[in-house]
Length: 235
View (cartoon, rainbow, N blue to C red):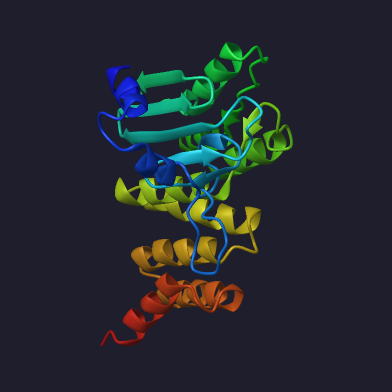
């Protein structure tokens, strides 16, 4: 709270500096720098300088930032128009922390809280370990149409695949990356990631096919370009 107050009274930074930080940054092509992949399902927001800025100003001008690592998640939200603040710390890395912070701000402004959907990625991961690929895939496809109560996105599934790889669960990683190519067949990134897992498994030919599929969709995918170059240069 002292930090929040210090930002308002100019103790830390000049007002002009903060105004610049709270202004959406522009990319080289002139487009606004939108926050990557809608962090936490928090609605559309743009990148400022060290701050995210909500596009929706119906409750006021709201800026925020998050932080996290395994075992810790945080969020700091500031309503500049009304000098409201929401801070949440979570020591179990809860997937629902960010939308809970948004709901706290909504309650402060007399709005009903939003329904917070559960992560289908986590449900899928548990099902895959407990009952195998067929059951897990069937469960995911059955629940994903219920977007009110469940959420599923490409990035979460991709991160799950890499988490499996990191912890030496190669069969589960391959299954997850393969499923992601079926869920998001127009994404160059999912094929690149599947290629990484296939290469890790020793299936070089299949990995090359995935990297090439990635480049068919996006010829500028640097990760796929580098991967193919590395493979072809191997003895």
